[in-house]
Length: 464
Ligand code: NAP
Ligand code: MG
Image (cartoon, rainbow, N blue to C red; front, side):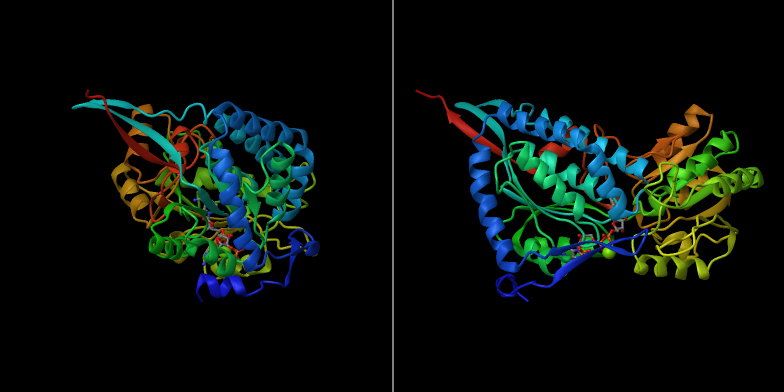
């Protein structure tokens, strides 16, 4: 179907949003129609023209005001995210604070986007970072609000308009964020949220001739299709895709800390995290001790109501996700599992697979559930080779007390983001993104700003 045909089609059915911890209806929303998408693109073009002529300091002031208002509404926003995603409330609070941090970080952007002057024969060349124009943002359901902010803030800071299509499963925090942005003084039309499926609205955006860039986060398979389609109109793309990240645990490390780290490193957000360290390579003679600590971690994990402040792990996002995770685990060697609550909700227990072969699908494919494979290794050279034997390269950890080895191994792993003696991956002020089939481009950090610009080069003839 072409874009014009789709624009004529009305995507009129309502969208029912479900709370994964209760399976109850959380909201019913009208989906954006194809012609409303067209209107949003036109409004974005007009608003962008004015925004690109707004002074850098005025743009910065609006972005700071958004950050302030996000902080003011932090508890409401956290509640929306916790209920819609099934994310523990404490994690959702951390997400909201990182959203405010992201807007504040990129508020410095408009005044930091400087070009160069280059003396040449007969004159001088000047470079400018011009906005791309209208940018479409397509986001997944696992961290909807933070991932949206990673794209919205630099795109606006660079002078663009944005159209955000959140995942159908989790649109609520994006809608709240848009309201907050307008209340904070962002001109109408500069940031719109489009509610509907990727197959219709997503495709319409990816094919639209008036959109200059697609910033996408989601699965590798959808990302591959978007890259191919976007190439038809030579759109710029940033693609943040799937992962199968590894923790490499040497016997000289703090084994207890490495095992406890998996509470966040693979069971965080119920494993629905593109950076989940779902392969854990452990030096062979430390495996028994490590498994002992891991058993304690798993047994102690508080799985249940996301709104209970003590909860560490909530449900999966949907029945479909639950069925997919269960299918993988049913055909895998389970060493031990944690507990889950009874009753409604898409619950799956934290699960440890061992012993398991590197070639087992659970050890090669992204599971996106609270499931980890324990894989013994003998030598440094061997573990690097086995870690890199993956189509993915998003994140990972190295655990050791040997400083030289820590950095040597981190440099040898083919991943975009590594952490040493830590399971964390994302910091607003540092770049995030993948090697290999985990994506193209980087988000966050100082360089992401320029990915929302085109470099213009102007020659000034100074000859008499
Ligand atoms: P997904 O199925 O790829 O969907 C992501 C987004 O793309 C959704 O908004 C989806 O819309 C939309 N979409 C689907 N088909 C499309 C199409 N043909 N054209 C345009 N848009 C389309 O991913 P997901 O299931 O939401 O999220 C899980 C995946 O995201 C995992 O693979 C995970 O690793 C990855 N992820 C990566 C990162 C990272 O930064 N690298 C971060 C988080 C998640 P609808 O779902 O509404 O139809
Ligand atoms: Mg999906």
